[in-house]
Amino acid sequence: MAKDLYDVLGVSRDASQDEIRKAYLKLAHKYHPDKTGGDKASEDQLKEINAAYDVLKNPEKRAQYDRFGTTDPQGFGGGAGGFGGGGGGFDAPFEDLFDMLFGGAGGGRGGRQSVRQGNDLEMRMTITLKEAFTGAKKKIRYSRNDTCGDCNGSGAAKGSSPQTCEECGGSGQVRMAQGFFSVARTCPRCRGVGKRILDPCNRCSGKGTVRAQRELSVDVPAGVDSGARLRVAHEGEPGIHNGPRGDLYIYIEVEEHPFFEREGVTIVCELPITFTQAALGATIRVPTLSGEADLKVPAGTQSGAHLRLRGLGMPDLRGFRQGDQIVEVVVETPVKLSRQQQDLLRQLDDAGPKNYPKHTQFMEKRLKK
Image (tube, rainbow, N blue to C red):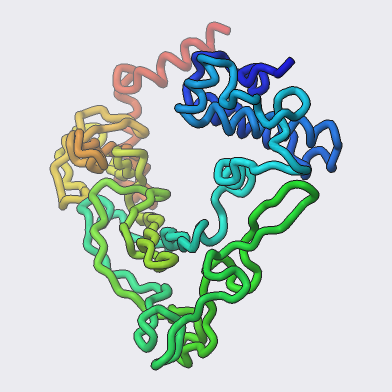
């Protein structure tokens, strides 16, 4: 009794064409001779799988099979179990199997050359914190492959042209037999191109490309930070067989600033103030990335206090908001005091605990223990 084709592939009768194809590729990969070591039972199984797929992948054959249980009044060639295809081998649905086994690699089938995008390039760019704050237009210079001007990328010397490969006949592939199975591999002579250069160009030595320096002007967006990656489309290596160029990726590194530190969109800086400014309060001009700004220091400000300048931090890269600048106050203790200054400070210290509430609270708690 002939096996049901849907059971052979392990799919239901209402399976889509895509589901049938995926099931076939999975089974063909499982029972391929490279996987099974040429096991006879696996070879027979693969014959059944290919014969079943040959019917079910064709909508007309599938409809006829669904209606009559066969696509041939005499069966599928009269072989055992309804399969076999005659002779000692079979005509595998090669295109699907080749894609599955080799991922479409190599020069195209039927003489078609594989058009591929060129390789991407990477480089690093160092910018200042100020440039990251405002955005900048930076000139960059890098090396890449460009189409050879002498041969226009053909790789052949002037007056000549690439010739069709005699090994593969221009297809870029050669067929190799593995037992009963025939597979195609990239032609070793032309490496899948389908053509050979007999008289190479003197300038590029047959490569079709030459190394050249490239200079570009790149826009660095405001708010960019270290580790960000900028993409410049189609500025990478040239494509294969007139394919599009790859892209250029620029990795940003922001230099450290001597005064400011960055925490996301927040800018932090340290501000030393005098003992008198901290005690009495003051308005102090402080630097920001956009110039100077007035900072009001409240009377009685303690060392380590954080004062905020709103909207004076880094811009958000997406343009949603502007960060703040945080000013960390450091009250500087006076040094090298004269005798008179020392006497004045002692008078201040003798004024009483109300001037030093934290010190007074600490001492009271210590004495209670």
